[in-house]
Figure 1 (spheres, chains in turn orange, yellow):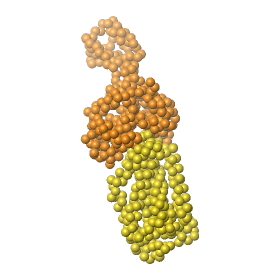
Figure 2 (cartoon, helix red, strand yellow; figure 1 turned 180 degrees about the horizontal axis):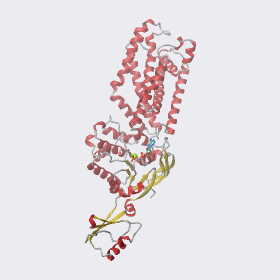
Figure 3 (cartoon, rainbow over the protein chains, first blue to last red; figure 1 turned 60 degrees about the horizontal axis):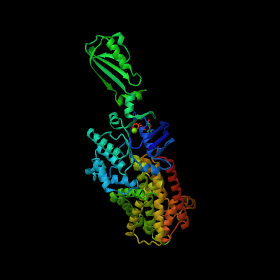
Length: 306
Length: 253
Ligand SMILES: Nc1ncnc2c1ncn2[C@@H]1O[C@H](COP(=O)(O)OP(=O)(O)OP(=O)(O)O)[C@@H](O)[C@H]1O
Ligand SMILES: [Mg+2]
């Protein structure tokens, strides 16, 4: 099946002369959860805003389910729901009015049953007659999500949806996101909480200084890019590392009781075997061993630093 | 054209107006009463009839026009500036709607509000002077045309402004002087030739004159000129708004 959103050679230079996006190409697959990571100012919001029609592109093209997002914007935008990064809400309106407004604005008649279900799902039903100014920050964030879903979009953009949402609610939110994905909605989210991407996403994209520097299946990424660390608990402490064992990534720790060996799964497939052989030759024995895989966060920091 | 979307914007704007209907109506009504007290009763007594009608009756169309222009401009400019300022504009920009739906919604609502205010002022005037409206059709036509044209102008100002000061400065520096100098309270025929000719460059003259003609057939300029000039101004404003949406100027980065 062709991808649901196709971004081709997209660039954006703001009026200030700042190049926020630099030749970004990206295929978003139907029904996936794609997490976009990147440091502040990387261009994540700019990319989302261009796809949604809020910011004009400088060059390149975007199609949404085959519809060009500029020349055929009605068809393209009907499919999309957007939760912006900032809490932009008309504070004098009530919760119910504002979600009904969102639905009607997209040309769909109010469907009271659907909106009720939506507000209940986002724990906002008991607030439905309250003015928005009386909501807390986390409630406003959830209300933005309700507004974005009011017209039943097939694609949902979430720009930092969990900023300012407490831990319990964050879990609830991710359950909502998973449930949506299970109904076939494609979800693109940005976040600075890397555990979230690790937890939730099918694929991860990393943007840095306007460039998409990586987009990969999350598991493959962690497997491929991951640094692993082997820890050996020695039977007898060593005063210092024997010369015969010396190699990159090997260190003696914990007063000589532990050997730590960091290695890259990609580059050296037989490095563990070699190390173990050398240990046997040097007569170093150990009681236990375990390995740790580095997290997405480590990978991410490694990429962005380069 | 997606009518439901346009209607949604229109109703959201109107609801804002109805939520504060008291405030929205009280100030134009009070200032109208004051104008009548000052110009109609106090000064008007010293002024001879103008072209056969009392001064009080003469200024009614001018007063309504004054309110219509200032209210149209301020309602429409605020209506679109506020979502830009607060950021809620994102929802309109991301929605599957075109410039047309936004204009119908925002400008239509601003025009509707100022027409309501205009009619309330008309009703208030009835307490002070006997009025006759000889051409009700044309009166309504001028009311609509003016409200729509100046709401479009306000919409443009609201799109252009990048601060609350700019939002107020155009009405203050341009609309109010043009209205006061546009024959709202006097016939431009009484002006010396130079000022009379200069006044003919003031678009408000044509509006007030046409509007007044629909009441009592007293006009400073030919009714056809009035219609033509108003229509021209409408087309000009429409052109500018269309250009703004085409280029995304001040709407999209
Ligand atoms: N309206 C604008 N005018 C000029 N420059 C802008 C504008 N909006 C964003 N930028 C610049 O474009 C770059 C990318 O911004 P963007 O908001 O896309 O980053 P981001 O990845 O979403 O960052 P964050 O994680 O902080 O939200 C930044 O350098 C920012 O300063
Ligand atoms: Mg951002």
